Image 1 (cartoon, rainbow over the protein chains, first blue to last red):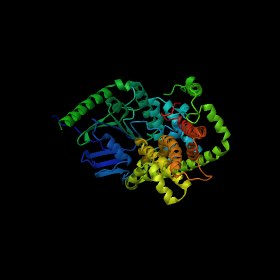
Image 2 (image 1 turned 45 degrees about the horizontal axis):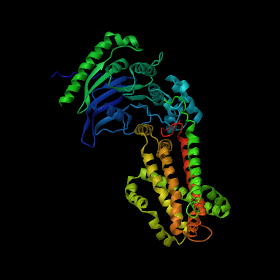
Image 3 (image 1 turned 180 degrees about the horizontal axis):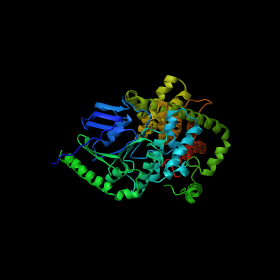
Length: 273
Length: 263
C-alpha cells in the first residue's frame, strides 16, 4: 500500500484551530481521531472524504454544536464550547420554516439575536436576499421556491448576520449540476465580492464532489474514515475570480486527479479497515 | 410546487346536500307508505314540527349541553396544552404522569360517572368533569406529538443562534405543533359533546338545569318518540357545527403552508 502524503500548509494567524481532536460517540464509535486543522481568516477550504469519515462532525465542532472528547477547538485563541452566535451554517437541507415567508425566514437569526427593530431586520433581510438574487421572492412562501432557490434563501439566512465563519454541509448535493454551478459561482462572489480587498468570511465547505471542492477552494482536505482523520491536503493554486474556463485549466485537472487518487486510497482503506 | 389553488369540484357542496335531502325524503315516504306509527319511528317532518313546538324547553336544555361541552373543551385544551408543554420540557414529568393520563383515557367514562357523582354531589360538575376527561387526552397526545415534530435541522439552527427557550417555543415549537394540535382539537371537540351527553345519562338529575340527554331520557320514558328525535337532532347539529368549526379553523390557519390542507 502506498503511503498517503500529508503536507499541512503553514498559516500565520489561525482564526480557527483544531488541535489533536478526538470525538467518540456514546456508542463507542470513534468519529474523529487526532484531527489537526488550521484555518486562516478569510480562507476557503473544502473537506472531502468517504461517507462516515466525520466531515459533518468537524463542522459541528467548529460551530460549537458539538464538543470534542479530547483535544481542543480554538477560535481566535479561545476554546469553542458552545455556539458563538457569529457563525453561519448552511445545512444539507434548506431547513426553511414552512409557515413563514422567505424574508421572515432570512431575518430569523437577527430576530433571535435581538437588538434590531422589525423594519431594520426586514431591510437587512431583503438586502441579503438581493445578494443571492432572490429580491423578488422576499414575500413568497418557501414551497413556491425551487430547490436551488431554497438553497439561495438558506445562504442569505446564513449570511444575514455577517458572520466571520461560514460552514456549509454538502449544501448543493441534492441539486442538478447546472443549478449547482450557478450556486457555486454565487457562493464565491459572496465570499470575495469583486473589488473587495479581503474575503467577507472564512468558509469551510463539506462536499462529496471533487470538482466542486477544487472549483471553490484554496485548499482541499481529504479525510479518511474509521476513525476520521485528515489523510491528504491539496492546495489549489489558482487566482480568483474563477470562471467556467477554470474548469478546463491544467491546475484544475491536476488537482482533481490528485484528489481522486487520495480519495480512492482513503475509501479503499476504510473498506479494508 | 403549488401551481395555483386546487379548486374543489362543483359537486363538493351540492352532492352531500342532495344526498341528505334524498335520504330524508325516502325516510318520510317510507313512514307514510308503510304507515309506521310515530311512537316507533316518526318521519322527519313530524320531528321538525315537534322541534319547533318544543323549542322553548329544548333550547334551554340545548344551551346547558352547549355550555358544558364548551367549558369541558376549554378546560381540556388548557390542561392538555400545558401538560404537553411540561412533558416536552421534562422527560421525568412525562414518565411519571403518563400512566395517569393513560388510565384516564382507557377507563370507560360511564363507569366513573357515578363515582364522580358521589364525590362532587353535583350533576353539573359530574357531567363537566366527565366531558373534560374524555376530551383531554387527544389534546395532550396530539400537542405532545406536535411539539416533538419540530424539524431537527431548524432546532439546530435555533441552537446555533443561541435562541432562548422562550424563543424556541414561540418561533419553532408552537408553529410546528399547530397542525397536530388542530387535528387533536377536531377529535376532542366531538368527544367533549359525546362525554357531556353520555355522562348526563348516568348523572342526569332532575331539575331545570339539565341538558339534552335528560330530554332524550324523559321522552323515552313517555314514549314521545318525535320529541326524542328532536332532541337527538339538536345533539347531532351541535356535533356537526363543532366539527365544521375546527375544519374551518384548521383550513384558515394552515392553508398557506401545511400539506394536510389543500391550498
